[in-house]
Image 1 (tube, chains in turn purple, orange):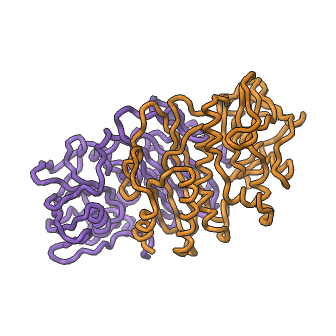
Image 2 (cartoon, chains in turn green, purple):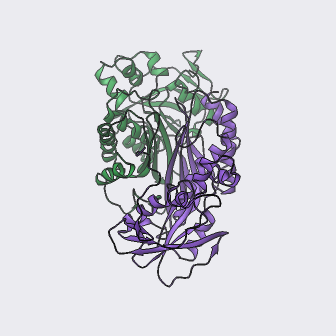
Image 3 (cartoon, helix red, strand yellow):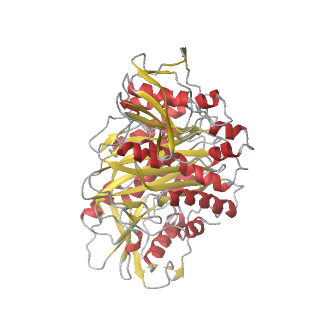
Length: 300
Length: 300
């Protein structure tokens, strides 16, 4: 394996340039031509061996998930993914077959999401890790933020929660394992919510509801009360749904009077509580304080 | 250290949003509003502990260089840097003081280059590493590429070569050490070359002249002959200048008849050879084949 040979093999698997992506992989930088009247949104997400995935995981799943995490952030902005950059560091145990399978999983989700791989970086390192940058587009001014919630809004989540943690804990639970290894970013749902102008604030659930909701509340300067039953992933516990990460569902708030369908873009939408005027970030669950106990890289 | 506390401290050191950077750090994604008539260019560059820097390096220098590498790619496109995303993974040995000093070096170069830090990612990992994404802008269609060289063009380099490798080898050589630890990306030079429409192809020198020139020649489908003396960094050898990495000077080609000043934006510009019609990628140095012996992550 040489750097140039790995990249030459990869380039053969990529589509040619497009109207927006003027120049893809192979130069000092990719060139993208924006459409008039659009804002661009940008996010990066890392995965590290031993933290976000294990050496024994299927390489296709690692590639898929590396991209899914960034696409989920783009979905949370209500944006359409435009292109992606991949920085990949290969540990000493990595063989060409692993690299090939990693790209297969990555490019499978890229093709499904119609997002071209436009460039990135490649290196040898002591551990395997990757960082994925996803760019998306949205009509100017229409991107959703975490900071738009107001007291009186209703809080919603899409889909079912807790499956990501269940799949980590129970490798034999097939549906949950799939949720853990190959999460489906809610791009179509994010776009549908934007077109109907439903959310007042939105973010994706990657670190667990209790932690992510806390962040949304702090950003908006509001508090919350959760009362309704949570949509729990079959087989998971309510604690999994409250604090488990890796679900990649959407969390959003809705102004009073705005109609929210029970299902949109194939995903159920469940009201789980309401925004209140309390101390920013505070959350009550059935009357008791709900601490943010989701994933924090620096706590453990 | 918690993830949210590190990021809260960092956000206090950052400028607020601007006309182009509508939303910076703190949401699922940053929001950037492009100017009409401009292309955007994007690059990512990783650095890994033990590969690109050592634990004992000054943390300010690590932060500076992590950004300098990406800015150098933007300079090579003839683009103006617009914003940057930083993904940072902290190894178990990293203390808050190191993080603070890393950000100091990073933000020092960011301020000097007028490029806001717009977001990124943060994690604990087994090793310290970082990935920096830099976005730049250029009038539509005006970005330089590696693929524009033609037989008959003259080959130029900016500044002096070999100092990066000399600084790695000789920690006591102060000027070379500075080149190794705190390289100065040639942004002003890249912009000046674009405004004068001098280059037919351009790239930055990060992996060594012999390897990077080989890449430019392959991209352009041409060969080259180097004959003139190289501008060697004081104290470095000619081999350092031919094969040493980490110089972050600009390599470019110029059509016959185009006038090139001896100095531009404070950097000397030296003709080192000419583009020929031979086998793509082949390079002769004073009549003998010059193999690409610069840095390749996968060779050693």
